[in-house]
Length: 113
Image (cartoon, rainbow, N blue to C red; front, side):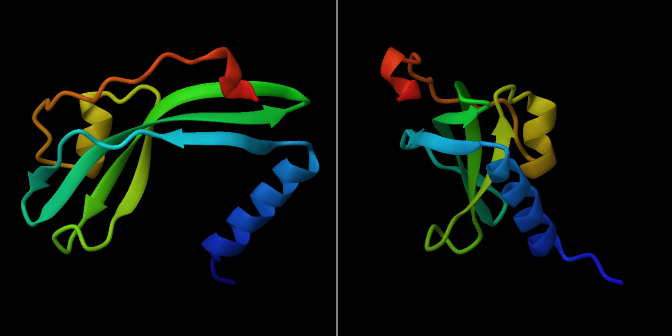
């Protein structure tokens, strides 16, 4: 039997939804700078995400790394979470040499609504 990633992800998120989990809000901030990693382009994309679980809102600030292999025509996004250490970033962008992350904004009281 082969592993079907899509099917397993669907089953996982269906189970979460059945237990009351869901996104309320997902606010993305535009990246400030695009960097080069060999032939790839990449940028840090900060976001604030609010979800509910058990009837309570949970707000998280984190980053995605946007990656393009075709000069910016198309982009893929990889989450690096809310603790983007250089080691974690280098797993996705091996040439990362400490470029500054863009600032995040303050979480506001309305983010959970």
